[in-house]
Length: 270
Image (cartoon, rainbow, N blue to C red; front, side):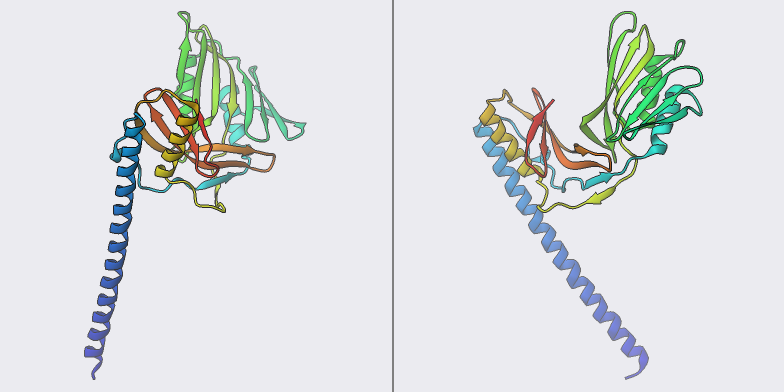
């Protein structure tokens, strides 16, 4: 047999093998889709029997986000300090893994292991609301929610985001006085982390809805409709060595938001 015919036979065999593998994958995906559809339809019926509206198309089929371990990022802390205190703030080690920053034009900041921080600002003449929005965009926070009186005094809050997913129990609060930003406090997450695995498989959206339904029955929570189910993170622990984020599902209802931890199955609310 000449080389040309042998080459064609090998190519044909490879094409047949690839076609077989693609067929197996397609069959597997079809089976997964059918299983998800069946589970979703059953959930919709169970929720309806409980007096709650739920649509099958609002139940995500995708897996939850991967868990994350985040190491303290001193450079990011300095960037945040510089944002509010001006360029080149002076850093000092306060001991106990606490670092302070002092601005040349006034103001001071303190950052602690675990991500918590407090900043006292000296920013008279600066548009506080605009500065807050700029900070949230630059350092991965949600759109801030303002609670202000007529002269621009009050607070604003924003939720941390990691890899475009919200971390509801990880937020920052801004204090304004007559439109000027005077204080900032909350949690700062490092920008990068490493994926972590768990002993058990994280809960799917369908399993999270089941846990939510069980909680609603036990607490007799007033919920009549599930509007949306989206992946998010939960700040699980913050130590001197690392910050841990675990996957969770955010269940938005007509009366508020609920969060289901994908590892423990615990349900919490705003």
